[in-house]
Structures are given as structure tokens and as C-alpha cells.
Amino acid sequence: MHGQLYEFFVHWGIMSLSLWVASYLFNGLKFASGSSLLVAALLLGFANAILRPIMILLTLPLTLVSFGLFLLVINALIIQLVAALVKGFQVSGFWTAFFASIFIAMFGFFIELLIPGSSPVVIPTGHTISI
Image 1 (cartoon, one colour):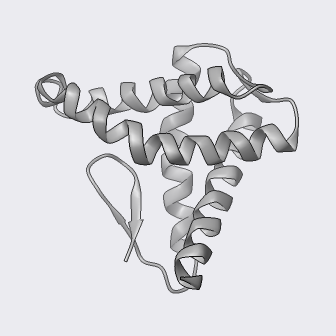
Image 2 (cartoon, rainbow, N blue to C red):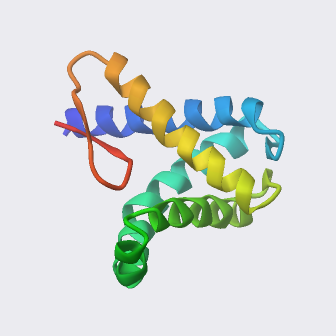
């Protein structure tokens, strides 16, 4: 139980750090406060765990035709959805969300490499899982 809770907080922290760094690199990604950053990171984690698989399943033909590139569009749409739901989190447009989602996935992967005891494995969606 404690191990799962520890992993949850580690992943939440990584997502928060990734969003925070992305907000400095992308002018169109802004947070009004630290609490909006933490809430956005939490909601983004839940959206990636729950909504993303459903969206992938519903758009499977398009994803296959685009050789998986449509998954990047799904990532951007999820970031825009979270920005619409979290007060104090703003994304200026689709392309900002698109490139920020690529950065967030890559940055999170490299941060997970630095955590002792976890070995991130890249799955085709661009996200990592710890084994």
C-alpha cells in the first residue's frame, strides 16, 4: 500500500515538474498559482489514465492510418481539456498544447530515469510505466 502511494506521489510530482518547466518554455502555457499547477497535474494524470485509453480506442482507425501520429493530437486535446476544467491554467491554442505535450512526455521520461529503483519503459503512446 505504501509503495503504491509513494509511486502516486512521485508520478504526480513528475507531472507537476514537467508542467512547470513547460510553462517556462512555452509562452502560451500559463498557471495563475502553484495550486492551479498541482490541480492541473493531478487532473492530467487522471485524464491520461481514464480518458486517453477511451479516446485511443474510439480513434483507432485514424491512429492506425496515421501510423500512431494521431496519438499526439489526443495528447494535445487532453491538455486543452484539463486547461478548460482547471481555473488558473491557460493554454493559448492547439499547437501550444501539441508541442507542450511532446515536451512533457519526454521530460517526464528522462526524470523517471533519474529516480532510483524505477526503470521506465516506453510504451507506444509515449508515456512511461515503472516496473
